[in-house]
Structures are given as C-alpha cells and as structure tokens.
Image (cartoon, rainbow, N blue to C red; front, side):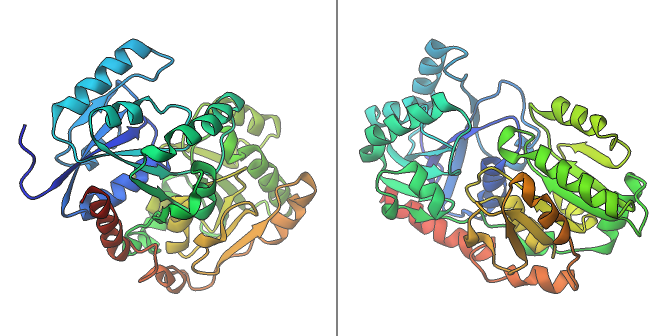
Length: 363
C-alpha cells in the first residue's frame, strides 16, 4: 500500500475507551502534526466516544493479552503489515506489555517510546515493567516522556528522553462567564456557591476519597459549597457510596465523562488534585489556562507550575486542614490563564518541536 503523499505514517499504540491523559494528548496534538499521518490501535472493541476527533485515521482494535493472547498476536502482525509504517509510537503508563514493540522490530519498523506516568498501582505490572524496561531499552529509536519523573520510571537511560509536555490550545480553555453560567445552571448551583472540582479517571491513583474528605471538612465551614467530580472509572460506585456514608450526596456532583471539560473548569472556583502519583496531568495544564487556583499533591511535578498558581501539599490524613485553609479563589482568572501562552504548554509552539523530534527518529 502506498503511503499518503509527502507524509510519514506512524502507528500509535494504544488508546482506551476512557479519555485519559494519553487520549487527550492525541486529541490535542494530532491536528497540529502537518507532516505526519497517525493511525491508532485501541484496546476496546467498542467505538470510542472521541473517535470522531481523530480525523482521517485508521483505528484498529487489538484485545488485551489477558483477554485473548493468540488473537492479539495475529491482529498486531496483520496491522503492522497493513501499511508501510515508518514507526510505531508506543504510548503507555508502563512497560508491562511489550509484545507489540518486539513485533514491530521483527517487521523492521522503528519504535518510539512515550512515557505518560511515573508509577503503577499494581504490583504485578510493576514487576513486569521493571524487567521489561531493561529488555526493550535498546529497541527504542526515540524516547519521549511527559515529565522528568515519567522518564525516570520508564527508561533505563532517562536522560536520553525528550520531554514532550502535555500541551493544549490555551485560548480554548480561558475562563468565560457564559460557560460558567451554563454549567452552574445545569446543576442548579447558586452564583454565591464555592465550587471545588477535579477532572480525571475514577481510579485508585486519583485518590478521590481524600478529595471527598477535604471537601467534607471545607463544607462544614462553608455550607455554600459543592464538589464536582468529572470523569468515570471502576471506583465510581465505591465513591458514590462513600459520599452517601458521609451524607454529602446533595453537595457532591458526579458528572460522568464529558467532552466539554473547559466549560466545567470555568464553573469551578478551585481545582483540587490529591493524586497518589502522576506523570504530568494535562487536566492541571487546562485548569491553569482557566485561571484556577490549583491545590495538588506534593508528589506532582513542579514542571507543570507555569502560572505559579499551584499550591503543593502533602496528602496525609493530618494534612486535610491544611488543604482546607488553602482553598482560596484566584483574582483575575483570564489574566492568570494567559500566563500559559508562549510557554511549553502552548500547543501552537510545542507541536512543531514534537514533529521535528519524530522526523529526526524516522530519518
């Protein structure tokens, strides 16, 4: 099959059904990569809620290894043969599964690694990751990472990695009164209420129970407040039960997954992120663009603190009062958000750097 004229063909591994950091990265960057055509592998047999945002791309499905290892191997080989690919772009939170890297190397296709996190919750994946990263280090023709901590986790030679920041279209996320009003009207939130919010997958890593504990304490001091939790995940029912046990169900909103996160960020007054670990969370970049004061766990990289509007705090039980004391609104949110313009998190500047690094690997 002939390649698209004048463009390099890259096969991206892997997307999931939920819109997390990796998915947001490609939704944001894909339209800015002028000289590169991207096709994608997904790990879900269903149509992804955001597939329409990945224009003119082939999107292939392969099962996870635990689901059907034989079919997975056959599908990977078929996909690698389906087009003259210049590189496999391996995106993952860890290196627990490296079979596609090995198959790409057998097929003579170059490989780019891209680290998107700095840890994993699961002991079995952590063990496999630490074994595999020594096995595949030589197979990466290019090494990318979203942050220094992610590079340290992913590679045996992290200093060789290029830091590719999770950039966004800053202007798109700047605070707007109309967006704020629309979301608050949707959920019947009064104008004088303080809205605390977080956006992310409802998984152990995000430490949402701690967020709820912080809100409970804050709500006792300020009843004119609510908590908005945007996203979905395997812990949703557990978290809803946790909220009910605290009798907070009338003040905590679970919105589910949404495709207009910028509107929710305008509706928030404070952005909270007590994660157990992160690579470099794109939602924290978006929150800064919306001019929000952000209070985050002290394990999150300081590389992301462009606006200097982020407060880093420990996530110990005895630190909950400290979180509550730091819940203060930003003053001029539009001015705060514009601090990201022309920074490494402005995608109009960063996309060209990323494309040049990919072309360097291929050429």
